[in-house]
Length: 359
Image (cartoon, rainbow, N blue to C red; front, side, top):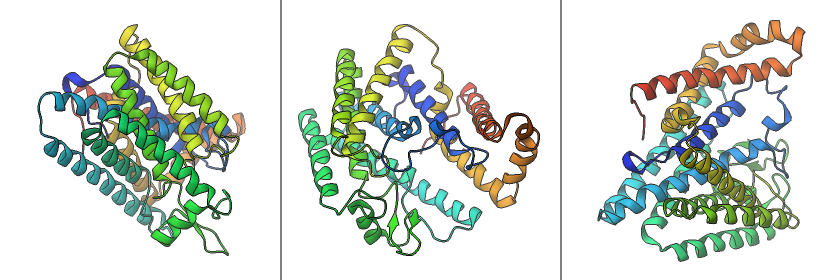
């Protein structure tokens, strides 16, 4: 998930990636899903919350990292074919790790069916496609492809009967392609939906490509372009949302622009604070061991669930004594923060010993 190493590292990018991974762990691991503060939940369908910014921000940073890694290696004369092989192998490994995590989840939680797509699978597909486009396609054509993706995907969504859950064209196509191996099956109708499905990955790829172009601006010192593009994309996404709603589940083009604009502004801000002003790169330890934190925390969660320790750990460690004093939401948040803190200690320990896990 992080392909930049050595002299090509940017402290601001590591920090922003790390903060994003920590946010992923926070929102994915509440003590009680029935008592989560609204900003830490995804929007039910249309609309956007702070949590809905996390995944597109990570994919945007994947694109930034590709630009920071691939361009210097091309300039050093490394053959495109060798770099393409590296990209495809790593994309396959990320996808495969996602499949393994879902296999563990199937076993740990006794799920009714196996899910093929997911967060890591989407990252793998976007990383592979964006990496190849960076290697073989010139910047202007990359922009053209990004625009075509947004327009074509918008037209595809508009061709459906509605944008409603289970009834939209993306969900219908995913269900036709993946069968029961999607995230959710609607009782009664038997229709399926997957928030990380194959079709909506078109929008996610556009987000990653936006990150590639932003990474090139960062490397070339054109930071003003980051600020300008971020503001324009954010405004364009807001305007487009009047016709095509912001929707994380469908990864709508308006959502691509809105979240891409926000990500561009955050990258520019982080660069100014960390690289220019010299502020500490908070989150760096998570950023340089993103795969260890994300996959390791998931494996830990599944192991605790399989052993029957997950619910008792929350109940006895947090809920029993905190709920009477503070209500049910505080212990749920405290558990999530403790989970992040545990992994912060782990990644800090790994970073101190220069141990970095990559696939």
